[in-house]
Image 1 (cartoon, rainbow, N blue to C red):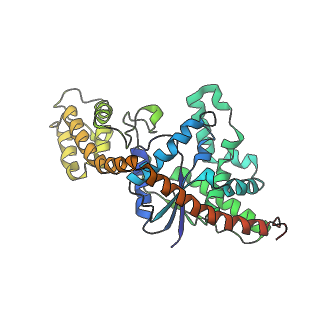
Image 2: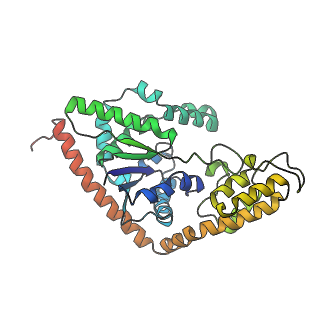
Image 3: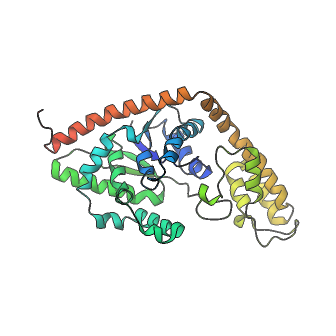
Length: 334
């Protein structure tokens, strides 16, 4: 089996965007690949360095979300980034192979810097060395564990290409050491928020979290944006501009044609449509939340999964870094 490496930052609860955009696919891929899932707490600190409590709190919570979503620790290795120091060591070695100007041209980095400026105004101008260099850290993540296939969305393709460049540069200087990873492009586009915003996020208040209870689900869905041209209950509407129908397409597929036709013909009111979505969303989240409840009540199992996964990852990382140091001729006294 080829090896997959993917990661996620522990900065808050997983929402439907995370689930449909990434985690659902990871659940499928764990049966087809040797799978490593990194809880990227070090990378989370690149823009949460002044709030370490937030990152620490969310490490176990993220692990529980992953397990509740269907990640099987018998098939996938879940590990904590900061507990594998070889990642930081390889990041330093790789950092000598990448120029600052190349990092600044990375489209993913440019987009994220722009988003920071939009969110934080002038304070977004202050980009730390750690943030600018996190693609180098990601390259270390991937190569240290022999990642051959990297599941990504289209917006993350530049990060994989950056890794490929680093691998080619390292191999050309020190000899054949790493394989160039291939991107496995997800066919799922980024989910929109309930407010119609192209970006879904906890800070924007437009996402349904996997942990949301029924009251929170009701509140969020009842406030979702619908077709602005539909004024009265029996007005004909365009479901394709309605965020309620957008979410129906995720969780109401058995009844989707009926929902669409009734909306178009003016036979479906927005309130009733939202109530049906609330019911279907609750049913969709129920098995995830039941598994989550089990792990919340058995934190010792979660901790053991994280410890075992991190030990396994560390053993592989130590073997790889020994090979790297030999190639670089810095394996002194061996």
